[in-house]
Image (cartoon, rainbow over the protein chains, first blue to last red):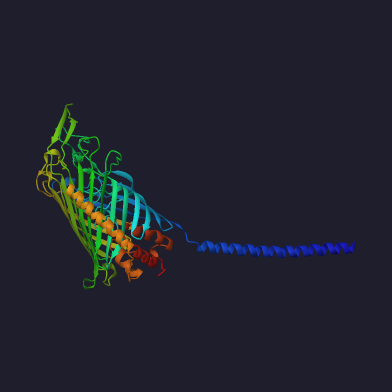
Length: 442
Length: 88
């Protein structure tokens, strides 16, 4: 009996030992496997990458009206945050998108800001890009169109050395902000120089024909900015009822240091709605752009020179407005056909003393800009309605002092002086604007 | 207007032909390093951010986005991305 008990105890003890040993081995094995898995995880190349970038901005504006000091006012300018979302898959596929959340101020004619009040939420662009090869990228969706370089590369708060857009350039001027369609782009070396290209096939803009008039005053004169027959509306998406537009931009960078770029852009499309008298009206766009950036030791700083010229020609057409006056009478205003050609250009020079020792001065940047927008004569595009048919051109001179707190944070102080031919039927000074804006990129 | 359309067609056909022939030929890599290319390309539009502004993974995505958006040649873009990720 005693022997049996001892044998059983020994067996139990031996079993415990082996189990403990086995568990220990098992633990070691498990730990080893886990360690290897961790290593594999750490070394694994992530094929999906997501980044959120963007900017946020706010500011104030003081408007001085030389005609009537009662119109002088201090207001906030557009305030907003614009996140940009990037997804990449295996470095071949990229989705990029920007959403704008903005509180917009009141109308700031001549400054380039939007006129609507309240919160505006817009999908600025969303497209899917595929890297076909070293020289070709294909995009589909909504993207900045190939009209010069201002709207695509230079209108953002951290790239625009002024606060507003130049007159007539970019979104709200002679160009769309973004377009919906297909884009092919790329770049390649040509000896020590470089060539880049961008070709679009997109939904064409819509011709405004006058039937969109919403309100008139008691005399029947068209109110405000509703009298815009002959302009192109880039915001309306009416696929199926309008044609497609083709065009693009070619850029040439002649120097090996990439300091200078020269570009030419062209677009063509039918802009009248199908099934109407305007269905064969076409629009042609031609643009030239220039950009020069150089660190110059002799002046201890960085010079940035930019310019762009836009020309838009829309085929002649006859426009009319029908409306009901205060007496309930149906009336029609027929406009004589006019030569529907507009152009706009700007020249801008910036200097930043980036090479001097003083920390404060090194962060300052001074910019001067001159811009002009020519409006076709014989149109009703003036605020005064159809009587001001000789509305000519707008010109503007502006200066802006930027203080770069960081590479991605800036405070801007700007003055813009406007000169409009035939403003209120006489060549007098329209309102002058003073701005302060703060912008931060993330 | 017809003349304008023909001019456009000739310009873009010429560009596409050039792209085809050049893409068939072998290309010589620029002798510049990633740092030089970074300062020349990135500073043309905005202040060029430093390496520590974003993580390595973020630089991969941002680099691809900027290559497409700013139309930087592929070899130059790869060198810039490697420089910003600290891999050069």
